[in-house]
Length: 100
Image (cartoon, rainbow, N blue to C red; front, side, top):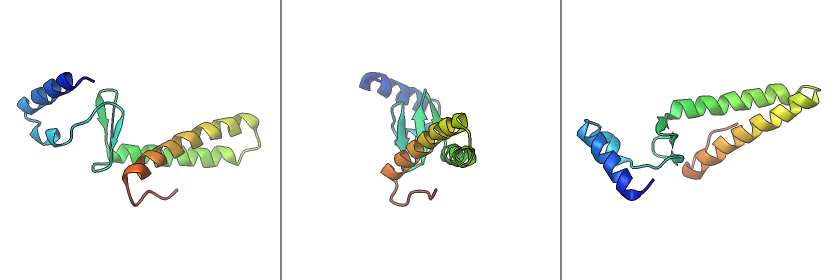
């Protein structure tokens, strides 16, 4: 997102009464360690949803990793990647990362 476009978006949001939202400027696809939110695809994913996703992927990984089925193990690997990606993102901005 170009700087001019970003400034315009923030100005419009501020004029619509979203002044507090202007304290945190963001670009798409970024993690905000202060709020725990992810900014992506033009919307905000709140900290609660990020944590729910982390727990979901961890639980799915654990269920499938125990199965004696090659397809389940392949899917478990995919869930593990998602879980670890969320952990890395959160840990990069948080001195007290979530436990797995």
